[in-house]
Picture 1 (cartoon, rainbow, N blue to C red):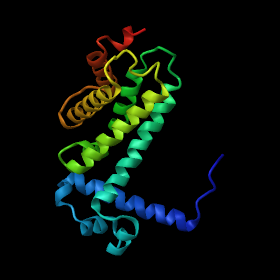
Picture 2 (spheres, rainbow, N blue to C red; picture 1 turned 30 degrees about the vertical axis):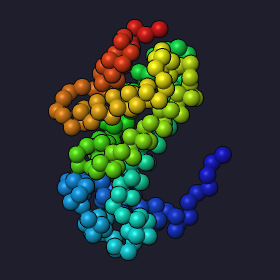
Picture 3 (spheres, rainbow, N blue to C red; picture 1 turned 180 degrees about the vertical axis):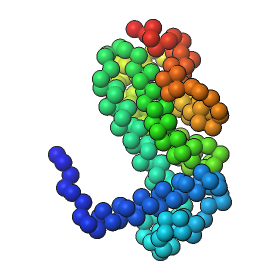
Length: 200
């Protein structure tokens, strides 16, 4: 069922939030999280300081909101693509590929999420999100996703999360010419000990 259209007030409120989010991400990429102030965010967004606090608690709150939007998009796309993968196919490859494609499109946001320009607290929250998401996805597709691994599930989830996050950070912040497809293929081969093209 389709959601009802937003009212004029709701559209205005959403535009204001979007302006603040965009300003916060831009400034963090330019200066680093620690150097950014709420006043700079509101100046960049051309909004009043009081307006900021109507929508967000502090600068971590506005960035975490931006990150959650990006992570939810990644998760929704992953679920959409996985539904089209044949049973017992190399579903993990498509899982990784979706993440790298989204990171490529949202490069700045992912650098704020994972890189040195962000904060250790934000990175920890992103890691916790990935852990919960992978755990939920394994429960959703227990016979398809990471089913060949026999280690305890809690260990598997930590290994996959760490590998995905660290490799993605390297890819985004180190000059290289690897495509999302190449990154997903190499991650798949490293963790699953076969090429995705050779998987049954």
